[in-house]
Length: 244
Image (cartoon, rainbow, N blue to C red):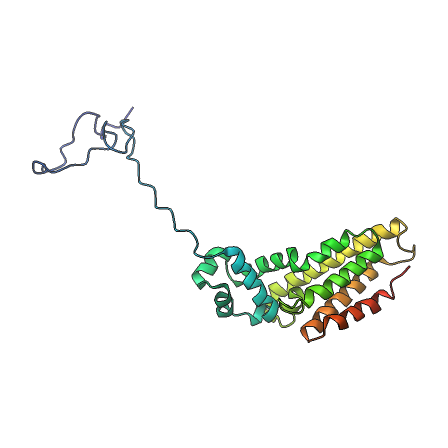
């Protein structure tokens, strides 16, 4: 049963002085024929929808690419918000709205790096033999860290070298990122040993750590100015110690 205090449909409550003749008055909610209402007694008037916001005035994919390059070149702590927003071509407000704070932006940039410049790792793991995995891994590290149109070195290594207390969570995330790569190599070499592709006395964990250490060293040397040819010789020397 409806409350007795509600106005019965078809009646008007005496709520005060009447408006002068010719003045439009809003009908009570639910009055049949009221524009924008279903005409059902007791149904609230339909509210206007909020205007749709304007689309972003920038390419988010391109902005993330530029942010990745800033972190790659300057590291996490070295990349200031002004450096990032200037390179991305957006304001800080737009950056926060699209990508979150600096740390969240970095994690998105690291994911992009993993799927782009560092994707050689996954391709190497798919090689048919352990030796070819090692060759593809070190060869990929040399190429990825010495591209002429991109920063030298490795984002996953460079970004953590100077990370202090303020960047501890990022430093830990980068350590996890590198350790995940080592773990994948170890799993791949364990399978190779089980299949007879590696000697029975080969240690998959040591081989994985060996490759990751050489790969990280290549990245540091590339950032220090070593040429691609010099680093290829380093990779070849490391591979000469590979078990057969």
